[in-house]
Image (tube, rainbow, N blue to C red):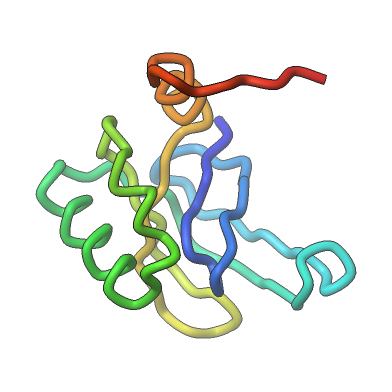
Length: 111
């Protein structure tokens, strides 16, 4: 599966992972603007835990306020980013795409 992990050092990062299965992800500075090393797993969680992680993320970086619109709240990334332990909101790409398809007044540009 593919997931969007939010606020990875201020970035939204797409990763390929299976829920509950540890993974590593590396993005060189040339591609991400800074070196990123992620290790951890996408965990399935109850909505209440997702909401807590989401609130903490928005509190630490208000630029991520738009992710408060996530409707399917069931995944978080638990692990490390560049050696620092984190919990970050995550969303399957399928849920991410569905959220935009269902949004009224949104535009989808296909290339």
